Length: 103
Image 1 (cartoon, rainbow, N blue to C red):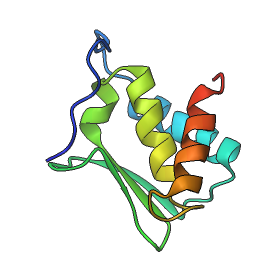
Image 2: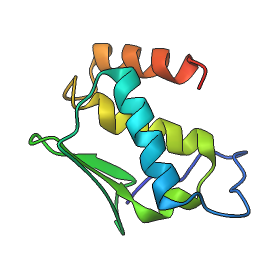
Image 3: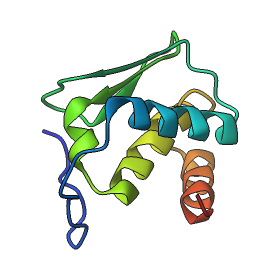
Image 4: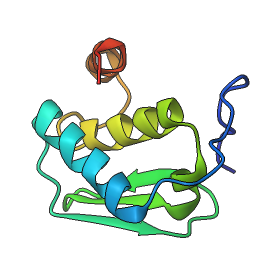
């Protein structure tokens, strides 16, 4: 079962468009230096996103209706997996650094 977004992050009245979301992903990919082979948005029941070893990054379509800060976290986490597999110390340090950065 996927984790719920953090408390206190109110969902926007309108979801972001798929095109705008993909733009967010592309912006973060450039910032992180990740090169996804394919980016997909589809319904997912158990995860907000996933990253394959072949470079495919998939996001749950429901993410488009979530708060921008939560979307950012999921995007950054999945794209970082293209550079750093697993959730070790390096991954956590890079994640924290990117989440502190200004958009």
